[in-house]
Length: 327
Image (cartoon, rainbow, N blue to C red; front, side, top):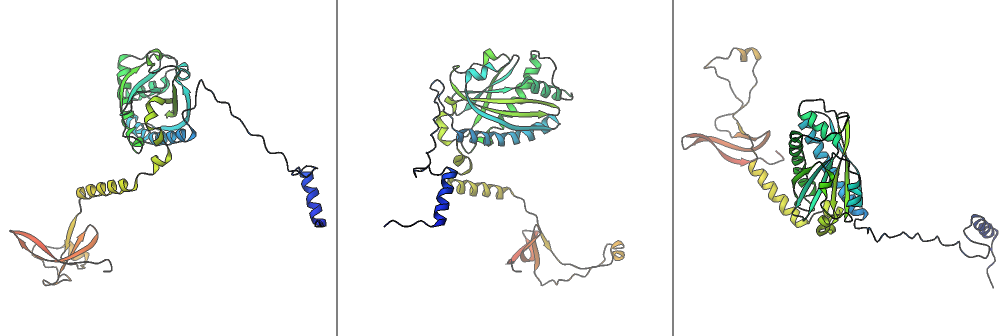
């Protein structure tokens, strides 16, 4: 015989029907509909969220390095932050460019292909103004860059590219090199208009001026290392390789380290009045005897004890014992 429902179970059943958890026939609520996303075959997705997030982290580190460099180089307050990262085709990127433009065509060796670095004209004018001793204000009206201004921008962008190596080192040993600067967007066509790229946008503030620096990186350039563009390769390196490199780096640093070594012959306390009137030939009694070992200090730490002597005509000290941590 079927079990009899208690009043509490009946109340719970009625409450579930009111809340819509079950229908009047006793069946469960309808399952939520699956969300179907449309796939664009004309522009396939080649960069997933992990790729974009990893690239943002890389350029966040790059932004911090560039902030320090530009602050000292331009002698003014500079702030560089990552604004966005997105996938698009090269035509969408080139359509946003307004002449005159600052386009740096960059060789991403050892990766094959070129990358486009776009620096907004307002920031370019501000950098030039600061280099030439001005307050760093951008121009109110856009104009073409002179030959001297282009040379100055070439030097600054070359310096900026030198700092790309460190943020990328856990993924690829990058050696970015500026090939040329273009001020007309028509001459910056490095790939097919429909080729997929990733655009990383950095916001730059130089004093009161503000603008953008864009890195347009084609998928063809990053394709050989796509599996490495993730947080695993960014933060976690091979344990054995890391241990070996860390030990080697530590040994190199230790070999270059300079440690001051001093010998404490003895100590004493005297009056300031006696110290002021010390003369040549005066004798100061110490708390040590000629037969006791002297303390040998490495920096500020007591490490050894030894006896004085002469070695090859020079004053020397022979280590007689090591000082343990307990002492």
